[in-house]
Amino acid sequence: MLIQTLQLEKEVTTQEGILHILEPIELAIEAGQTVAIVGASGSGKSTLLSLLAGLDIASRGEVVIDGVALSQLDEEQRARLRAEKIGFIFQSFLLIPSLTALENVMLPAELAGQKNAEQQARELLVKVGLGERLTHYPNQLSGGEQQRVAIARAFIGTPKILFADEPTGNLDAATGRKVEDLLFAMNQESGTTLVMVTHDLQLAQRCQRILRMEVGRLTEVTADVA
Image (cartoon, rainbow, N blue to C red; front, side, top):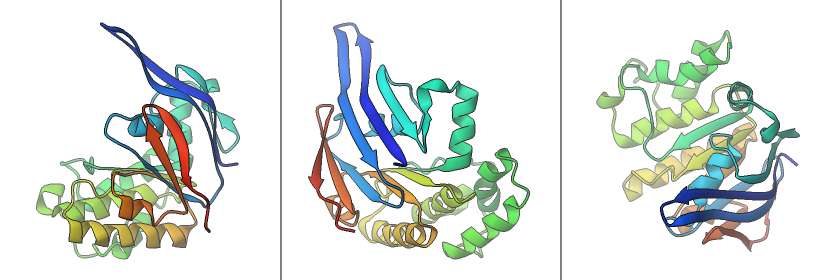
């Protein structure tokens, strides 16, 4: 099992008392699966994604990624695991404004110490249709182009797992569909495991599994049809 949670919980302390964001969650995702997590705003979708990616720490329970229990790692070790095994696509792109498209894509590979970062980045930007935009900065690119740069960045280093948080949420419908097509095509080509948070049911239905988050509880909506 590539991704597994064991009685995973998340709570925060507020002025009104303890707020339970995630009730105990048991989840198992096999390598190569595509999984969508849907639900209303505030239901806990993005919190779950952050816990799975090791960007946040659970209150109780465990996340196991490729056989490694995240609770047994310190922050530096979690960062190393993310660099080696995980790509992430954000709704707001999160490109670095002072870096070109090429430099943005190269950055994760450089931080991971990979020697062929520039070659990988150039090839990925060509794949996403931005071969003529290598030296452009984010403010010189449209929203759709920025998200394509973000997709290329997520795939550099051939991660085992790709997490996507509302990857088309900031795009118009037509641009969003093009970005979706690109994301699924690249994911299929690379054999990556894709876990996506989305409010877009049409996008969710392109995944093999759909999970619904309601008030911190996770349920399976559709069986694996792959």
